[in-house]
Image 1 (spheres, rainbow, N blue to C red):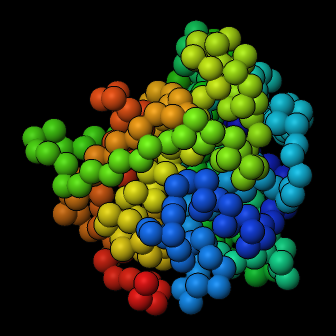
Image 2 (tube, rainbow, N blue to C red; image 1 turned 135 degrees about the horizontal axis):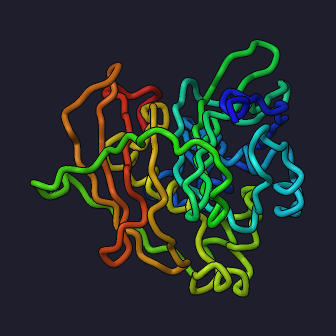
Length: 308
């Protein structure tokens, strides 16, 4: 099992067009009133929404729909870890650290995701947790634009004798005071069908017959759709909607969201500053139920781009 941690996957070539950036921004709820500079390529301050790289591990270089299960089933095996059924794997947590803003298109340069295993942890009958780091790299220079840490949970696929893993680091919001700000977003019943066009074609988010087999009410919303909608709410509230101010964003997927649910994001400024960026803790809820927990963002105090 020692060979799992640190194991490097073959690099994944990735690409995107300006059109992909526009679609992504639309799919996470940005509008002309709160984010035209993310939606209109001729805007004088046009910029990619900063969390866009999170989708590239699904999209690769695709401009066409792909078979999600075939791709995940054929993915590189991790040494010392049993083969896990992708049909019973759900997102655990995602974190992105943004080192440099990506260009509005990948054309003219070669880009790749360089991935390695942080660890694979056996949680017994409950399942298996896999933590992976991906770096978005401009191949010719080796420059890293974003670092993405992902954890996934293979439901009921534990008990194979692996390590239990370290204690997770938690960022609970203050319980002794009300949120400093609240952002609400009404998802549509077709939200998942729009978001999946970014490149995440998991049938769980489109086929209403799959969810009930996993204990859900139907086709659920992508956890990363909720995650990204929350990101634009946090950035709009505390970052002046300047994408260059978002330095880090993370959250844990606590419970499923159905298309059509109303998201309520509660945010707290803690007063902590890390390398010139202020810490914001948050939770996202649906009817009082927490759907994103362990939420933490770092937002630079000074704007990184032109005045919006």
